[in-house]
Image 1: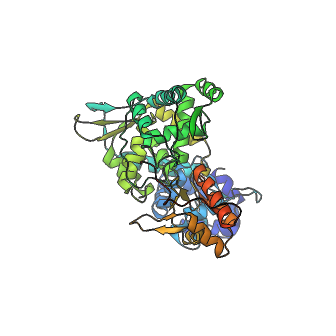
Image 2: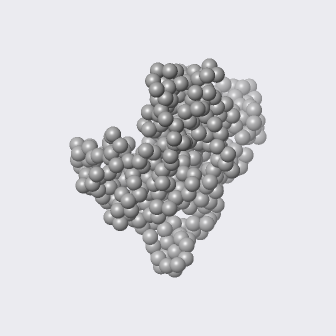
Image 3: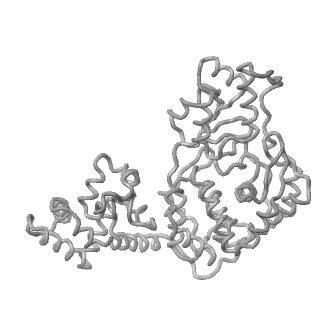
Length: 467
């Protein structure tokens, strides 16, 4: 809906408040006169520029996210979340400001509207400001790094390796290190296998594999191309042949969506960052000024600082996905320049045209790791209070982590807590579900505690993967 349609459906009191907010002179009891005064102001270029500047200044954080959306209708809860920083009554004040309106259809799922022309004008205002803030260069940097579709080639290498070798999994569900070393020698893009102690949040296998391999492996499992069964990894040939028949751009698009889905937990505003990057076009952009521009949408995540999230979780992964290339002034110097590729612009444009509301909001979540640790991704006292009966806290700086063991299960049952309800809660709030090895041991421990079977011999705490 355009502004004139929204004004037509607005009540007289609403129009009066909008006219007062915009400091317009009109007959206050004539709907037609108020409506015409608002439209005349909107159609005047200077007055419209003033209105847009005021909205984008007073509602900056919310408006930046509104203009990045590929739609202009919003659920009340969604708009309430966007306007939460502005305090109580923010939706009413936005309705009075003249950029937000109530949908005339009371049965719609999206009862709040930002008129199409208002959104477009605010969008143009921001894009001009964003492009002015980022330094550019016209020629290619001396040293350019790009991977194009190497991620697809390495997915094919992974599948061929699994088909030709007997690939078994450790008790924590990871491939053995010798298999990973052999894969790295075959991959077009090699990664270090030395990983930090804490690895969680960025996909199901982030605990055991380096970032790019974890993304490829998780993607292959989610596509059903490779299957983990009875402690081994095998190829589903039918699914693999179906995958190979797709166009390259379709394959890359599926990889990009998988990346967004895997990284949306620790980086809630990832989709907004990608939308912003797309709007800056295909110029070579200064990475430092681009980082400053995206900073309002970024956040630290446990062991990753905000800059780590930007450099490692976004820029590096976009290069891996073929969406972007990076450049530096000398072979030894760190990357200084960033450019979306032609394919990257196409992929991001396709994503912008799709509804991605389900990718942007996440409830409080945790990650259940194969080494029997539960890491709280989005700290929430209620969540931690609920999981407490069957776990014990792991002392650690900066990471809210817990461990589930045979004696914690026995303790919880002994104290009368409902294990089935606890497990259902963990499944519901876990980003990636409960790993199979953990599920098996939980069932054994519960049965043993209830006297339904012999207890498993305790020979120490559950082992961790080599990572």
